[in-house]
Length: 308
Image (cartoon, rainbow, N blue to C red; front, side, top):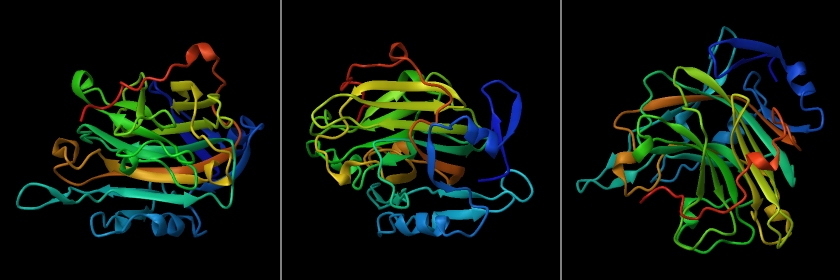
């Protein structure tokens, strides 16, 4: 971890705290995996090796180390979000989606928190929606699973941005969940945050996941942005089996526009970038606070989905 970590609050003030001070606030949680990209410890290579480089994605070289990222001597990861390639009929043939499932050093857990920071540059055009990193089991449930019924050992919890319909021009964060109550033919469930994702600044992110017991709807998920609770869900059924494969064990390093390839309005008309830094996975809760159930949505909302 870096010696200092600068967090920009929702107001205009900036505060810097040492890493040790940050970790003290999460004393109940144990750090199990981290990547700050300051040293050549193989973490960036491990992330890149998992990124889909198939002919219809070809995204591995879009992830690169950026020196002097925030300040002199600081390094981070920059992701290039490229304009897709279309055929003569206007169909997308190469999406350039950056997605890879990164093993967390052998960690297997039922309760964990993913922390990281993301920089959204000034002038970033959000289009309709897009994905950012989250947590998953051995085999995560993602968009490719939509044609099928939920699989007992597959789930995921990721961050998305939404800039759609009635919210157009007000890009909001979303806690995007795939669980066992997803119907065949449907994608994941969105839980919108309250604050606009502003550009030209870094945002701190925390995604908390507590897996349910087999056959029980006692799971929980939370999304925190800049130390503010954006979304919280209780009574979740992430999994329906008690196998090792269902445990929290992957960083879903996802960063792309969309979405379905059928909706060209979701994709950029020119290449742009995002930056990521200070990934840390904790066994247990490592969020700014513990919200009470009154701050959480407990009912499943299968109709709150992005229109296709």
